[in-house]
Amino acid sequence: RTMSAIKKWFEDKKREKKFSRIGPGQRLCDSSTQRNAQAAAAAASSASTPRLAPSASAARAGAAALARLERAEAEKKAPRPIGGLRGSGLRTEAEVRQEIQLEQQDRQLAVDKFSEPVEINTDAAPVLAVKGVYFKCPLVSPESLSWEEWKPKIRQFLAEQMGQDSALCAAVAIRTLNPADRAEECAQTIAKYVNNVLANPGEEKYRRIRLGNAVFQQRVHPACESALDFLLACGFQRQAGDSGEDFLVLPPEADLEALAAALECLQTAEGIEPLLDRCTSLLEISPGSAASVANRVALPEDFYSLTPEELELERLRLRQAAESEEMLRTRQMRECERQRETRRYRFCLVRVRLPGGRLILQATFAATEQLADIYSWLRDECLEASAATAFRLVSPDKR
Image (cartoon, rainbow, N blue to C red):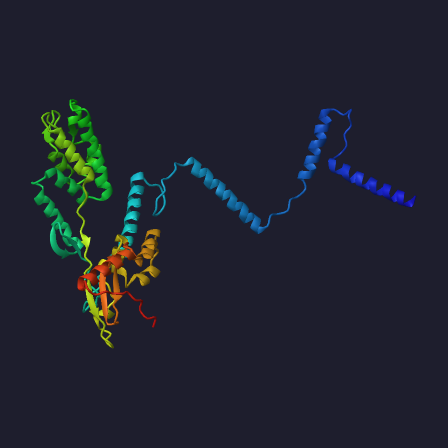
């Protein structure tokens, strides 16, 4: 009984506490006016209770929030300024564009300063294994020249041969003097013009090519060198139209068989490309002499293919480490720095030690050639030296 009484007492206390939180009781028979008056009296009694003063940190946070709200309201009412890169305040669009251009110029100057080629002055040239990479072109000349020296000679040779067979020489010039993809695109475009004439010989519109046409200018002339010479060699004549524009017109009496033959020449022609000169040489090993020709392993710059970024970075080769620590570098600068030491070999120098150990046969090969090319070169050189003597290739001692 005692335990049940205690439990009942606790339940009554909980019930009273729960109902006390709801508020004062109301009778169902009371009017709404009386209930409103009682609610107002309760609110007044609660308002009379004093509030605690906020702490210093809470006061600062509140002031900051009010300042942000006031700033946001002011920005909404005021005209939106055009943001700039330097300074603040309202600026016109022209001023912002000018500042952007100045920033781009400053960035470009920094890149140029970081990418300028370096000039290295040496008292004497390094001792190289070979003087350079040379090529030969028997069709043009029996000389052995560098690639840069062959370019003007080939161009001059094609110009001299243009009078003998204009269409064939122009087709070869298109394949030789232009990149392969551009030459192929030009050949395909010219083939469409010629095939339209051959398929519809009586149609006047297929015999006229407007020189101002965008496709013609992007793919034929002036985009591709010697393309206009080929069309003139096919029989097209340059004429001025009524509107002042120039046209290439094929006259009605033109020989269509010669036109078809010229098109076949263009589609089957190959460019004149100089062949790599092996520059075969026989070296002798001098015992105890480190300065012998066989011990020279340094190669000239012709053996490498440098990208434009690498050429621009050569000038700062000696100062790059110091300057990179002092200045903020962009992504382009970091990319140039990573590519600076990248070298891709175009050619290689192959040396084969002959039996006896004192003679070495040396030649230049392209990096894309295979081992079978080395065997073929070595076999030819040995047979030329002595057709009656049999040579056997042996591996060098692993010492």
